[in-house]
Length: 254
Image 1: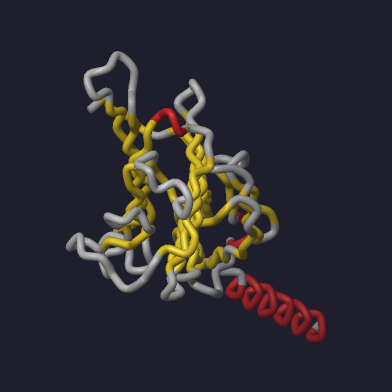
Image 2: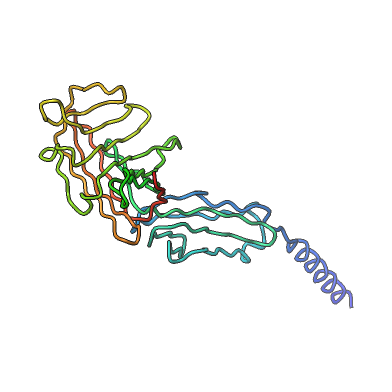
């Protein structure tokens, strides 16, 4: 009888201990790393979803959803860019919630070999008193590593849409200007000297010692209002910048 009582006492103690170990610890915080991701089409990166405290017992309830799988897919911690646009990764576990922004750029801009995403464009149709636009001013906006807004600015005659202009050959006024604002070197403008030779002008409109060794630009504008830009420039001092973008710009009439 005593042996049976000892056995029952032991079982009760074990059950009490087990019950104590099963105290629930809910997730109180979720962190998605990184909280904001910018990708180019075809890029793939790893995104981590972390739950706190680390000893939470309801982590199995964690769910992660993707608001726009057409822009980017998210599977087993891998985020892959598919098309230009934005999406949001949303993680939830109990009452804890976190969200991360995903941007897939419609194009890019490089300066000095570093690539930046172009995520918006604005512009003006210039009619010059005519019934149809004669020129457009198109500004592609991107953000550098400091978070500052930068611009790649084009002013092109509509008669040149769809043509590849070579600034080393066609400095006859067919292109009004191409400017890059990087808040450091001012404006870099492929231009022509009085003798017609290609040159580079800075923000103070003074010529530099650097000359243009490559200057190719193509702008296409279908009737739908989408613009496609391709630019490739290089200076004799080794400085290069390129742009490639395809998207719809918010246009106004000037």
